[in-house]
Image 1 (tube, rainbow, N blue to C red):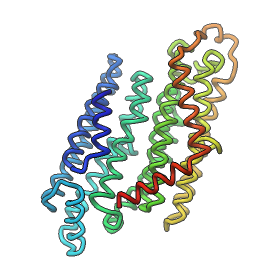
Image 2 (cartoon, helix red, strand yellow; image 1 turned 120 degrees about the vertical axis):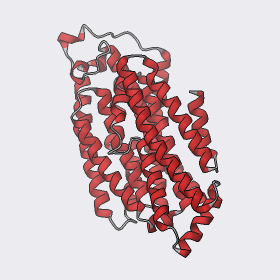
Image 3 (cartoon, rainbow, N blue to C red; image 1 turned 180 degrees about the vertical axis):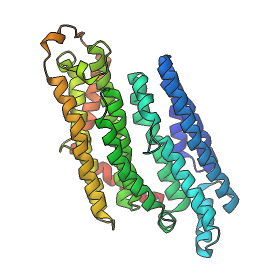
Image 4 (tube, rainbow, N blue to C red; image 1 turned 90 degrees about the vertical axis):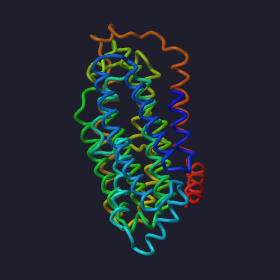
Length: 379
């Protein structure tokens, strides 16, 4: 956890592209250890798969850094940005510059579970501990997305991203992830795998905002990063509590009536589901509304709005049945539930998650204005 926290802080503050790469690798090693902490055969396989996929993404990022260093002669982000602006004026080396940008986008897309590079995520969540899932979804994925936003702004600049058409590619990948992540979630019977595929869809929302390539789009994407970082750990923590009440079973049918065995976990799942569906007063509504408003500045507004609406409907199609299942009393199986009182630490954690969920849903505008100011500073 210390290594993970250090790597995330370094990614946030570094102004050197190679230093960023070093801490991306440290982040990967720490995340693999967190996934593998359960020490079961399935968990080790999932951690190895995550490691291999993550190293592929890291390799692409490293190749891109080498190309950029060869083209610009710099590793500091601001110096590299100035050199790239000169290349754009002279129209020199546009192809290698495009390749470098594509490699960085795909490499960090793999590490942040962007569809179709997200096949490792459900296995990592499905076999790891509930705490590992909360950390992986709440912190690890977001660190790589933040690194991508930082590189887009401080190394390339929005005008270069648009000229090389990378914003359109990211926009399309975001829409595909929003739809396909939810489609895969619909097929799941394991609650943790369902929530994991839902994370893939939510990552698509973030990349949709990035693909808008506007200040409003990036601000909405950053707001959704914060919302997802608060809501998704709550969902995994709630799923863990409900699963424990059902004798550590993760099948949705086995969770019937578990709300009454662990009401804190049940409230967390219901609130998280409402947030992911975009119900007003919940955090997800605020970020989805911000993405919708930002879409009005984009020429492909119709595609963005249709994707946002379709994804919200798909979210409801798998979250509503899950909520109904845990609220449905099962008299035959109810006696087998372990209805022991959850520890005070669990109640406190769930209370904090719920409070953040409602706060972001009701009072997000000051935060969004602050994020917009920060995005403007990056330019």
